[in-house]
Amino acid sequence: MQFPNPIPVRELARQYNAQIIGDDNLLATGINEIHKVSVGDIAFSDVKKYFDKTLNSAATVILLNEPTECPPGKVILVVEQPFEVYDDIIRSYRPFEALTAARHPGAVVHPTAIIEHGVILANHVHIGANTIIGANTVVHEYSIIGDHVVIGANCAIGCDAFYFKKTTEGTFTPWRSGGRTIIHDHVHIGAGCTISKGVSGDTVIGKGSKLDCQIHIGHGAVIGENCLFAAQVGIGGKTIVEDNVVLYGQVGIAQALNIGKGAVVLAKSGVSKSLEGGKTYFGIPAEEVRTKYRELAALRQLGRK
Image (cartoon, rainbow, N blue to C red; front, side, top):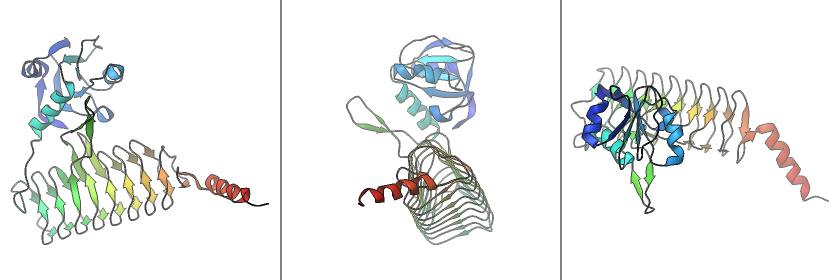
């Protein structure tokens, strides 16, 4: 998530009563979870064993709950509860806005777009030329939909991320979803699909990709161009699916993986690790199809005399 204007580190320190370690002249230009940070971003860690990972990331401003040595070109803000500060910053720039009207005045719809009965459009929604939004679909805040897109009935586009922080008491605290959902040109999305916005980054559906009905795309997932997903596919959060990937029905892909360009995953497979492109996979856990079929053939022989 990028801020409308850069925020001076000293201003953040005053607001959250933080100790500054490092260069206090730096500016924060955005905020992101550790998986998606870039230069200028704020990131946080409240577990000491993860301090080095956070400090060595691309993030410029690091929220920690105890002092430590600061790398050059960065700044540490020491606060009692880094997660609460992180979440509060996101909520400051992405406050909750209830859907109280069918179309928020801040939604921008191209005059050639077709919006069917019962569609709800939130604030900061942009819908491009010749796009069709099916009946009873909800398009949540900060969703950007390109030209010549078709979205079927009863979809939820840009809904909140399924992302929770576990507390020391064993309960779960939701992160405020501050990311966006970006659907590029010529994408087709079938009825009953749900696409979650990123926690602080973007969920992206690439140009020309086609999704069947009842598919779920998790928070911050990035789907490449000209992909083809059959019904009931589920993609875990922050997973990257490269161009021209085919996923047959009921394929499930775990979070934070990479599926290489041109990979094909056969129906009902479960993907628990990243896959190379240009190959066909099958099974639970999914493996290259020739290997999996040899394993199944060997198992069948075990019961024979």
